Image (tube, rainbow, N blue to C red; front, top):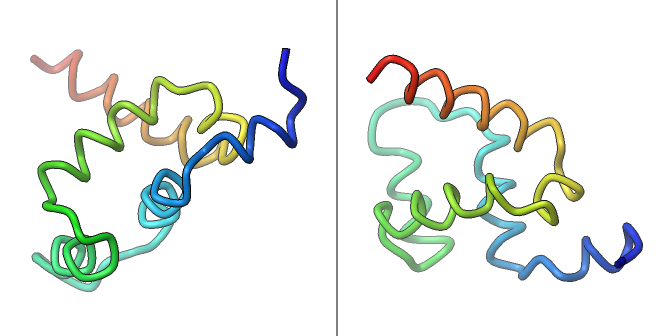
Amino acid sequence: MLDRMTEHQALSDRDRAVLAMEQRSWPGPGAKERVIREQLGISPVRYYQLLNALLDDERALAHDPVTVNRLRRVRDAKRSRR
C-alpha cells in the first residue's frame, strides 16, 4: 500500500487544481466557468467530469478530505432527490 505522501504525489497537478477550485467561493454566475477555461484550459463540462471522478478517488480523499467529503455529501443529496 502507498504511504500518505506517495498518495498525494500520485494526484496530477490538474487534479489538485480541480480540488483547489472547489475550495473557493465565487462572486456570481459564470465566474467559476470563466476561471475554469482560463486557468485550467478545459471546458466546464470536462471540469465537472474530472471532479466527479475525483470524488471517487481515494487519493483525492487523502489529499483534501474536507472538500471531497463535502462534495460527496452534495452529490449524494442530489442523487437522492432524483
